[in-house]
Amino acid sequence: MSLEDYKGVYIFAQQVDNHIDNIAFELLGKARDLAKPLNTQVTAVLIGYQVGGLADELAEYGADRVIVVDDPELKEYRTEPYAHALASVIEKYKPEIMLVGATAIGRDLGPTVSARVHTGLTADCTSLDIGDFPLQPKPNQEQKHNQLLMTRPAFGGNTIATIACPDNRPQMSTVRPGVMEKITPIKGAKAEVINYNPGFTPDDRYVTIEKVVKKVSETVDIQKAKILVSGGRGVGSPENFQILKDLADVLGGEVSCSRAVVDNGWAPKDLQVGQTGKTVRPNIYFAIGISGAIQHVAGMEESDLIIAINKDESAPIFDVADIGIVGDLNKIVPKLTADIKAEIAKKA
Ligand code: FAD
Image 1 (cartoon, rainbow, N blue to C red):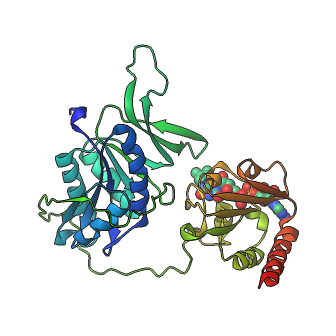
Image 2 (image 1 turned 135 degrees about the vertical axis):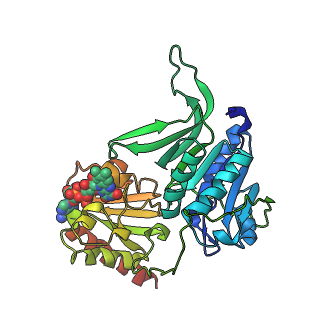
Image 3 (image 1 turned 180 degrees about the vertical axis):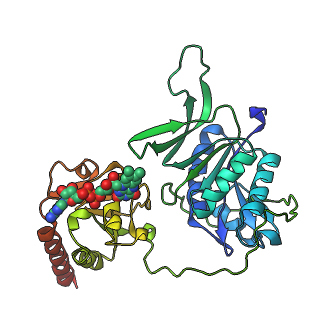
């Protein structure tokens, strides 16, 4: 493998039912940042059936090029044909960096493809940068430049590790939804579109889909909320979450929670924020009765404004909060809701 042959920052543009998933736009935003110091192009790899029409949307979110692999075998996601498609693109076009979303599809596809093209993959990265590796020069070890530095929590979130892949290409990483920021779309932007089909020959690894049954979600998508009122074990009971719901309602926000709440069976897992839940970055994040464990903070620290309410003034949540209120949430939250309601009524 000659590393110099590998050029460009690529993203896997996940689509389902011919709708591009938000994660593709977030990855494009990050890919643009990474492409700048490398002085290279951003390429989206779009895999599916009759998906060519989606290329313009990818261009508007920052793709210079779109490689489209279009085939009836790719109508629904299945590991084998998708892995064949992406691995074939990598072998032919030789990207330096390949980013995949850490979605249910990406978590299956990314590692399968990395094994097939004989490179490593760092999963669930929370930050990606271009820099030197090792980070500090070491005697008798070459410090390589312009490497992808992939940062992620390790050992159950108790430490943060920066990982590189200096001897193999592409450098592959998965990133969870909500971690990276998409750019403001550039209306009318166009990308170079390349159609490529490596050929698909079904074999015994091709799963046959008998029926697709869609799950109807009964919970809101907390990653889309602009205001989140998040509760922790300190809320005390599932019934007491009503005071958080009241606050969320007056603000036009949604309720989310910590893992302790999910583990207690007070709320569904879809509402959990954190390392093993969802990553959110709302305009306002209320952390109410949440201690601020590192695994929780990993999922919300990028919020624009963090307001913490906790009766323990030494709770670690106050280290990341922009506004901290020390006191009993049972008194503070209803008062806050009533005051906001009164303000709204005054202005109406
Ligand atoms: P606690 O830590 O029990 O905190 C409750 C807080 O409420 C306390 O600070 C207390 O002072 C305050 N309080 C109590 N009563 C009141 C009151 N009346 N008024 C005001 N404040 C009050 N956690 C997550 O949240 N998300 C994750 O994705 C996640 N992933 C994990 C992954 C791994 C591998 C591991 C090991 C752990 C993970 N955790 C995660 C768990 C995490 O370590 C913490 O245990 C969890 O976040 C604690 O939840 P909590 O803050 O609600 O509860």
